[in-house]
Length: 307
Image (cartoon, rainbow, N blue to C red; front, side):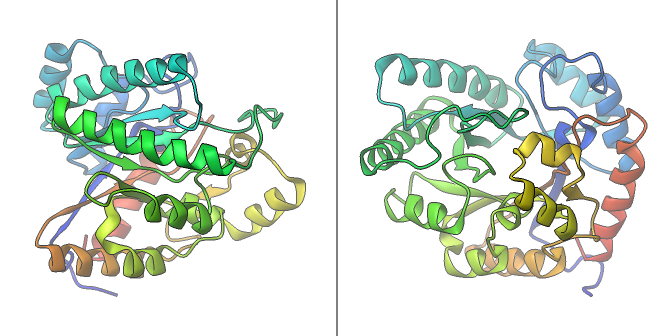
């Protein structure tokens, strides 16, 4: 195990997702003020914005709330469907991305985490579209990802990082490699979510070592292998898998985070830059008193890894 302070280039943060927040406004979710207060109590200094509208959209108010708690923002998050070939789909994606990017820019974030749209309903599992893209859709996805990444960088000064995600068209190692091989490395980088990648059979350390120049951002997460086996057997959609506890508290799952962090540190040292590693333990729904103890233990575990 590494010593304290060794992972000098890794910036650890957390996100509303680790407090059971998946939507902008649901009555059973932790209120946003409580989330911010508990983030500080747990020992974090960096956060993501979470679902657009969960934290105040008034950026002056949000600035004040963050300053009072000495918190900083690493990124905003948005879902897109860039494989769909219509002017309406592009316009909708651009409107949504612009709103989130504008807020992220206003509070000092440097990244926009972009997640592909689900191909099946997150709760019922009913298909929304085919789970496999055609060659034409792959070409469109690559082209529009580049186009949107360029526009976000030029207009808002943010770097887009694409987040491979379960139950989307960018999920497996094959999907990820295909996206990277078909896009400009100057425009398209990855948010490697260690939990989602393991959920879909990928090896995070191998990806960092093989495509390190394309890794722009990390989400730290673990999967319970026993629950995942049941999820695969029953073909559960991702939302139900999370409710079953497929994403578990570190260090109780896979992948082991120590080698991931070591590989990320080596990558950041080689580049001479810092690298965000944001804790995301998917918990939805969850009791409001559950997240804080887990967040404290997770932060202590990451400190023991040298982060």
